[in-house]
Image (cartoon, rainbow, N blue to C red):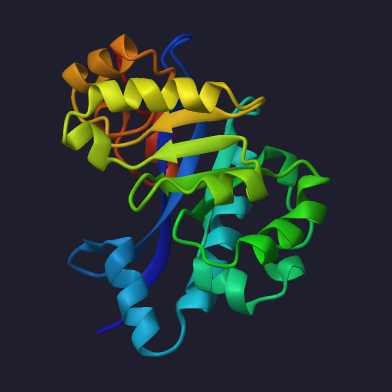
Length: 227
């Protein structure tokens, strides 16, 4: 049984100023009895060769809602590696999108780094920023960092879950040495996690302790105490 595609939004916090700097758009599937995860959505789509189409539609739906986000925030949207490999770059985002408020999240697993750089180049001239997602899942990908020069590094949630606080501190220092680059730590699921990240000097965080993924109206209504 199929599902209706929908998009949820999760806040990304600046804990130094206690403000939301952006929202990540996360694809979900809506069924009569439940909401299904992005993994399940893409698994079902992949079985019918439709993963790239779902990826594009999720971005379109998210960017369509950009007008409702606070003007000072950015919208983080995902680019599936298969999209990068098979679709022309001018089709990665809907025509007329306000790219100066958008951050494209690309996976560390992306194999076509040079194609990705070339495809993103004209979009970045329009103000698009880039985030390297799931960083540290495999081996630290210095080549991809050098090629893409992303504005944001999103550290994989496994670092917090495994309590690798000193490594997080070291990676934060490493990222800060790159001009214009910022570290976002994902998987922050408790106030203890928040405090430990702050102790490690982390400024930007995302996770259930700071807001769960919700439909946009609900996400904008929720008040969270980040400390």
